[in-house]
Image (cartoon, rainbow, N blue to C red; front, side, top):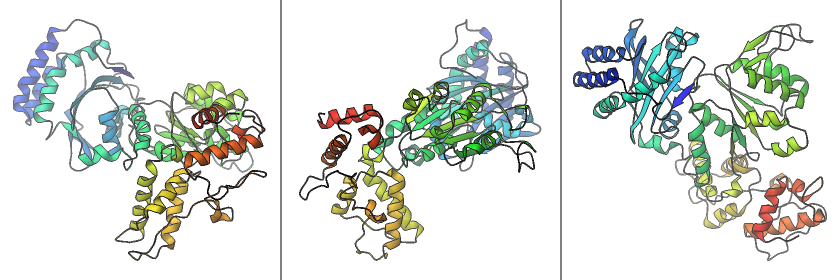
Length: 514
């Protein structure tokens, strides 16, 4: 796949100028068969192609691709779209681009659509060139050229596409709101705000950049921050949407079974292998494979995974036959892979292969402004599920308590806590509603005083419960238990389960001196 954001160097062809003039003249007959014939004739003076495609909005959540000449009698293709794809389309790309791709480039939604209707799109004898332009805040225009030849387009064709931009922009602006564009409603524009979470805006901007591109993504963050949900957004906003989305938890499978789970096995490969069975890579072919807890993958299997990523082929257990696969990888972990590399627990080459585009998802305690929004969201969600017309409200004191809580289990803990509280609440308007949190629910200490390690001091009455003060005292006590050591086994960073550099940064911010 080749992407051009500016015209490649080269002289402007007189044929291009004349084609642009003919296209603008054809626009005067827009909506009639004469328009398509005139457009087709103008384009063929510049390009070699089998079909030209033009994107139009369809009824409901769909895109309509008009194709000329008709393909096996069909003059249009209609494909459903989701809100994530619409938002990605308006945020992920530069204002204008020309892209050349073949059947392997599933990053583009256009190719994904064509492959559903054109048998030729599944062969090597297939090429696609398209021009895409953001015309206005709610309008995108696209036209493409399909050729049933391999490597049919090059730099000169990309330059010619840019030369025709003004002519197509004239068409899109004149007719875009009713026909040849993808439009976006105000609801779609707000969808990717994730219920208005201010602490997630940096993450969302990164998703806009990478969602439609076919590169590996590595999601980093603590347990419960929503890594799987972010992976799902990337999948739904990509050109591989409606293709397989396979998820596997690398930490939940016995080490002896991981290879067969990932790559499949043939009959007789081991005791109990009574038939040929595909693995996750084959099941995810042309789609997305989500490798959760990638840090738990054994070193031996890391080598096999690296080969599959580098060469795009896999071998089933018990077989020597290579199978090509086209899979986009999204990996996730709550572990520090750099430290694992230093301790020879994770392959450095695999880290760089997976981490082409790393995204850190902050813990809930790092974005306290999100806590009230998420609480309201989960309370409303659970109220609707249980048929309550009016959801309960948290008192200011209750909300203050929950905002001061550290949420070690992050969003997963919050969702479960709200679910539990909604099951207890009787549904009567005016009845007090509270969300209980902390280890006291499981027989430990109350949430006001987190469980201390042996020898640590319990908070005396009257001590400040401000989050920064509580965090400072906790770090100081852990440092005391570790005899002032930060690094290494038994050090404070290990006890707190955070990166040593992160701990030093927090100590500097809180004014802690060893």
